[in-house]
Image 1 (cartoon, rainbow, N blue to C red):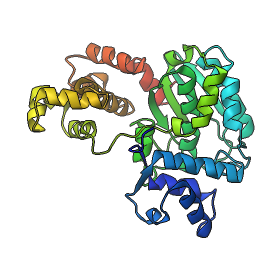
Image 2 (image 1 turned 180 degrees about the vertical axis):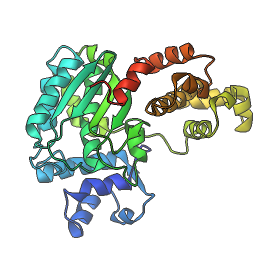
Image 3 (image 1 turned 180 degrees about the horizontal axis):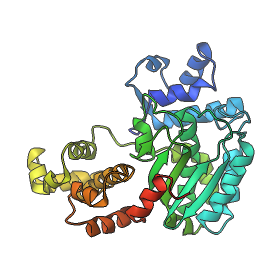
Image 4 (image 1 turned 60 degrees about the vertical axis):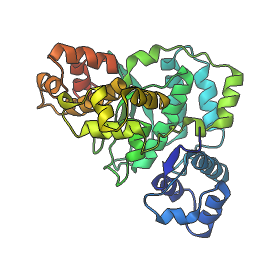
Length: 338
């Protein structure tokens, strides 16, 4: 992870909230990991992801709790290692997740979890026993651990279609969208993460040496590699969101707007590991999953809004993006399938 990858100061404050006394103790911890305490008072401040990872490890070591004191039972030091070791002994990601979630459900009193497979979609559901929802950071810290380990077990990033949370939307959730999904839904009946069931069949082939390297770099290697918020790709995606897809410019026209040649545009996006077509598909998928959660919007209207010639073209594209057809995704997201 490069130093240009950053984390919002909001997440630093969240990590400290239940795990470190305010005042001198907080300042000591932040100075030790290379974060200036004065940044806590600057809402727009960001810190290197590597510094945030050092903070996570230091707090976990000091409290003997890898979950920031956010559950009545401590997730004691070594829990992440045991989670990985037990999961990697399984043949597939489905079996690995079942094992890992079972372990976390035993360790954490208030966050038992269940893996559910529904045709082409899968979900990890938190079966919370208490009526009051937790704060958003608690849920996202849990997803960071589970999703990060799952990606390592599979040897590839597992795209998240949606995350639903029982809590209300926090004042700041920009980093959460980058980490997990643009489709975050709050004030929902239950907390769950939804992804393509195809991922569950991926084989697990991890060696003890790979586990040792993974744990040596954790949690920095399970924190998202943030892109510069002023990057070319971010600017383009923001512009695309502001206009209907049928009005999106072609490559040449976009390049002219950005005062560069088409070849320069392609090269600069390639340097960020992206293509213009990929950005358009990303925004279309983002809009599709949002509109599919609104039952009054028909599939034909969604197809039209996204600039598809007909509904069948939208179906084909959505299956390519998500591994699921739109009808099944809508039924699951609206709790008609559970």
